[in-house]
View: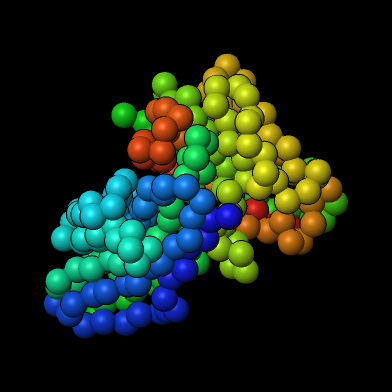
Length: 112
Length: 115
């Protein structure tokens, strides 16, 4: 079956710090990979995605590269802001129905 | 345009009662998904609709859970004889097509509390 493993949280950083959130996966078939974000009091929204090996997804200064050889999709940002404080979920889909399999999520807090 | 909407936003019920949760997907989206977000289990898939058919119900946790979709649009998730372990946020998502390339757009969720 499919599974997604995220690093344990929570993570607290100072503003302008570098961010890495690790994500690895196991999948039956060739997955598409996603990072979703849930800001406080808001719904889940797509942050970025990648659909094949070596693709890089990017949005709002965040990046993640699809690494098939290491089955990873780590999220990075060079300089975090207070407004990036949220819960981040790594996820994948395979197969025809495209249901999402999520990691447990990690809470990021950025202090001024 | 309008996003995915869900109602009610909050529902408090007593153990043993039935509840209905509603999802209005984005107009024109043929695929509709229900997920559950709970502290212990994280985000879990429940059921997938393509049009009015549900080809994947594998995530429904028990036969107390059922869902339907009518007119290729609105979907209702019904939980019968609710239990305290059913307390969670129930999320609905929709997307345009079958393929995994399409983004799933999520609603704000219904927070269910079973006393």
